Length: 183
Image 1: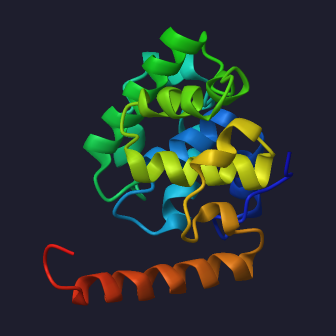
Image 2 (image 1 turned 30 degrees about the vertical axis):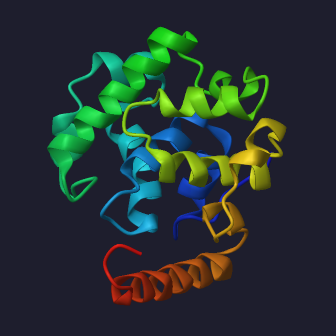
């Protein structure tokens, strides 16, 4: 298990998302329409505002005030507070509050894919991205078949790799936007 993931500019946030499975999942939920650094710094800010990131705490709290407090945790604080709440309820109710069970108890890649697909807010892209992180950074064998052909956060192993990943992602998006419709 890594001692940190290099997804933010904060060493403390990077250590948290590497050591706390709920923090990692919350970061992935928030990784939408904001920079990677903002999304994955969110779990640390949320923990500082609530005192805990465990599923039971998040599931029982009104998260919107914590998301709206300045600086806001996300560009869309209301909807992201609801998504994090829904995620926490799911983890509490299906995994007895232990988010790591999502991957530690998956017998193979199909079971892991199903577990991840069951998480609120997790579509195909997040499943592949989290799968890549689990396979490449945490050594989760069941995640190996989820790793896509293109670069993902799973390839980020240093601050420089994050810069390179983001530059490659911008270049790919520019190319995709030039492609004719229907391709």
